[in-house]
Image 1 (cartoon, rainbow, N blue to C red):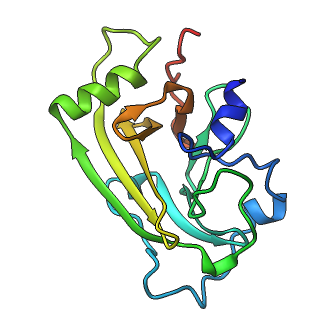
Image 2: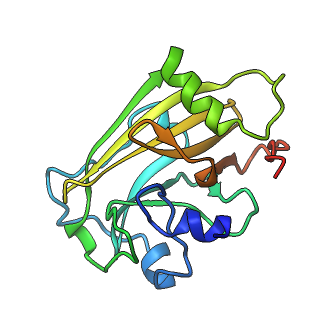
Length: 189
């Protein structure tokens, strides 16, 4: 399966939704959050808030890049965002009825960091400085959960999904600062 389809299929191991599989207006149309449940997470905790925000769309609440950042596939084939509808297919237009009830961010060290980083780092230079690592646990109003690891290199980062402590390098995506364009490391695939 091609990397783009794998990353954008919303399978259990992925977080990305292709803008082409969701009606473009639904995916990109950030709209008013009035009527959103009081149980909905409306802000993203630090340090994730450096790159991320939650927004209301026709498909429900999504976590996506902040205005000065971009979340993108390594081959630049598509933008990445995480819908609160954690489903195996195309999300439905549920509006404010789909939202996050939890976005928990924890800095990771030790064995947990090493396991996630070793999987993420496949194909990269072994001599580079290690980034800070963060585990993000998401939960939707439907009770579905998702885990994403972010690796912070300061002026850019990478994200990757993990399920039950097993990470999938096929789900890696770049988090780039639009105002600072480093040469991000590409996997040697």
